[in-house]
Image (cartoon, rainbow, N blue to C red; front, side):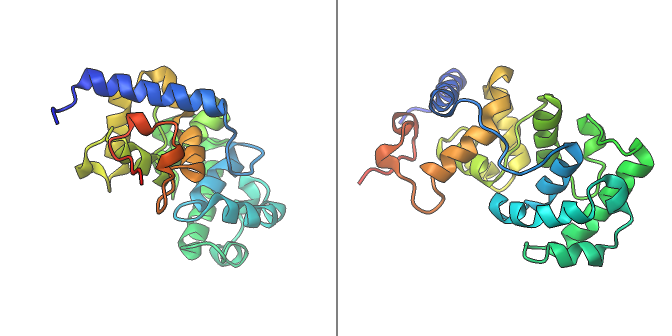
Length: 220
């Protein structure tokens, strides 16, 4: 099979986004939140944990510590007790408290609205920052590559196999081939598609609306 040109890959990637946009339209954030601070904490907690599990612990978490100021005064052990059903809960609890303390001390209690400042917060990487900027501030600087987006990007061969375990490189691959107007919706639409059809273990290729665009399609 001849190697796909960059122009052809770009055209295919755009068609993927167009089809998923027609299928799903705007998709709301899957994490329950009321403001940028709560979204930062929720996305921080979601690492290697499902959104549903995070949404189970955050009502009590934010009942006890509803603001950066309140959480900054908590101890990691107190927070850990509330979120102990989540993976890596001790490390996440420490990051929650430290992030809240930095928001209070360095940003007057307001979550910063820039990539440069967000990634300074403990436990916050580029993926988390992309989600917070997009959802809370309407700022689109990149694409949040979580496990769903990463899996779909590689099944569609929009990113080389060598980048499969490096989400930051996968993000850069997607940014290079997708016009910026598509960046905003990729994360939430692709997550929904991944949960509904392009499952990690049992992808439903026979009913997939992208089957003709996917080099990895598995038809029985």
